[in-house]
Image 1 (cartoon, rainbow, N blue to C red):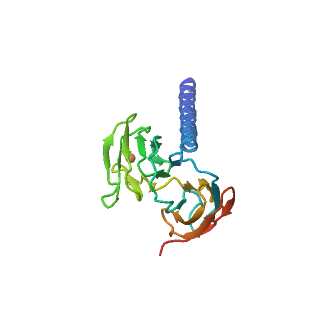
Image 2 (image 1 turned 60 degrees about the vertical axis):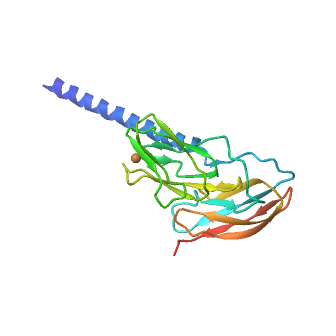
Image 3 (image 1 turned 180 degrees about the horizontal axis):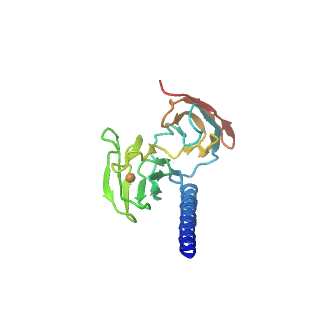
Length: 227
Ligand SMILES: [Cu+2]
């Protein structure tokens, strides 16, 4: 009898141990996926004697100052070739990864399903890039090309809690902030521009910046709740 109880106990302990390893594995995989995916997709532009814009975005009353976007509204005629590189929004553990992706207009984004369950990807009907990729299998991937500049909320009609954003912008001059709120926009042609912010929950701010060739200009923002 004792032997049987011991065997059952040992078996249960082993199963628990294996499942904790698996959970740890999944967590590690998720972290690696988050760290590995690009948060911006832009085309390469040759600029003579460019300048740099850098600074910090402080986000009030949200968990961290990451996932805000700083961008220049208009550079010249704002006409740029679309990037050839694809963006990726992965689906893992009932999450879209990354949570915020900023892309230049004309970028194709792939939506691989690397989860254990089927997902659907769509944007709401009032979005300027309205699309619905339907529900698709684990291991499959579907692309969509974003031809209009605007905020694109991503949703899944299987899981109401899944949400993410793609911000589609007119030119290559933008950056997604890191968790501490810092950002740097490189390769900017000399000139005076309107620099704007985007955040899924916070109010848009803007300020004028003058960029000089070979120099770095600083621009900080404080983002508050929308009224
Ligand atoms: Cu889903």
